Image 1 (cartoon, rainbow, N blue to C red):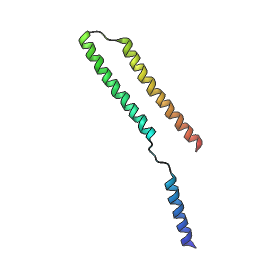
Image 2: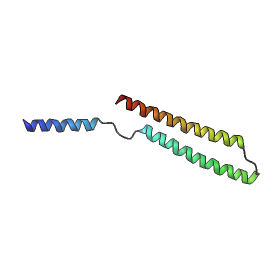
Image 3: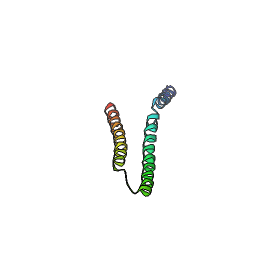
Image 4: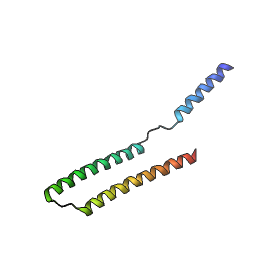
Length: 93
C-alpha cells in the first residue's frame, strides 16, 4: 500500500513539473531585443549628430529633441506594459 502511494506521489509531482510554464518566453526575449536596439540606435544617433556638428558647426535641436522623445516614450510604454502584466499575474495567483 505504501509503495503504491509513493508511486502515485511521484507521478503527481512529475505531472506538476511538466505542467509548469517555462520561465522564459519569446515575448520577454522580444522586449529585451527592443530595449537593446533602442540603446544601440541612440548611441549611433549621438555619434552621427556629433559628426554632423563637427562638420557643420550647427546642431539640429528639433531632430535631437524629437528622436530622444520618441525613444523615451517607446521605452516608457514598454515598461508600463510589463508592469501591468506583472500586476495582472499577481492578481490571478
